Image (tube, rainbow, N blue to C red; front, side, top):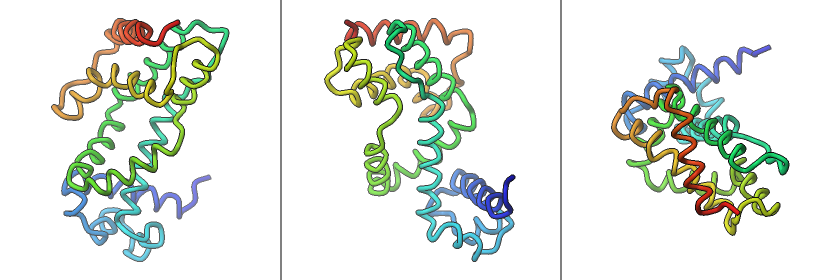
Length: 199
């Protein structure tokens, strides 16, 4: 059962997301967030000691959502292409989600204006091993892929997807890829990735 405190915290985060999206990080005050959330300023500070703490909580939520949504356990008995297809489809579904894209746009806008904060947050995330990095590591250890750097391989796999199904939507407001196009696109991604890393 969700507690009152948890509901209030969620309302504060949602209010912050909306205001950051409308006015930017610098243009949003904790007073405005409190008013939008229907909470006292004291309540907001009880949950988040500073506006940066609140922003970092949103960033962590985006990271956790992406990691959970794209998590796949490595299976040495399943062909590489089949496993890669599943990974890519999960990624494609995630980056086609309107709510996820909204959160990412909030982060990207502030990362451009606050590069030091962006660097600090990204470095912290890089210290957390993603599910994809772990999968790449295991595939390499089992001799199913020729991988020296699992994190780099994971980044390249993401890039093959995001070049067409993420960045155009984030940067230029393009519509997400139609579901009917997903399978053909993912097959191309798998072919390109296996051309480099396949055994």
